[in-house]
Image (spheres, rainbow, N blue to C red):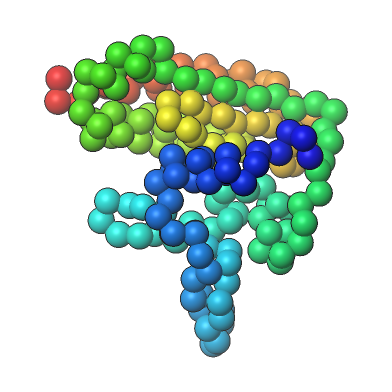
Amino acid sequence: PEERPTAAELDTRLKRAQVEAVAPQEQKLGDSTSSSSSLLLLSNDSKDAPLSLHDVFPPNIAEALQNGRQVEPEHHDEVTIFFSDIVGFTVISQTLSARKVRDMLDRLYRKFDELSYKRDIFKVGTIGDAYMGVTNMVKDQSNDHAKRIALFSMDAIRVAGETLVDQDD
């Protein structure tokens, strides 16, 4: 519990993710329409797109939140964590327009997301130029979790090197 983020920290993280509304949405379930708090609306340049709690949290946590249950802390003997940030990001963000920085991050982290799916890495999230993923936490990967992160890391370095900072340059 001491390591859990405070409500203020969660609010700050959500604002950084450009969340415009976090409120129950009307959701069609079969033939009936019901109110559900399992969807979030995230800002998207052209439209608001619903994002499921299952897209943000591990399945057991998303289900607990969706059902209004308290999320109990968990213990894992071994996990492997991938954490990256972009070397020179401060200079990049001072040099390029905000749109170009956003586009670069979007292109890079979409590739990272594809790799996380390929290597079965749980994406914890992105904040600014930081990307974080973990293995052996959401599902049992005790036999190869370190190898998964190592292979993901090598792939991430490769795709980062292939991703142009400024596509117009």
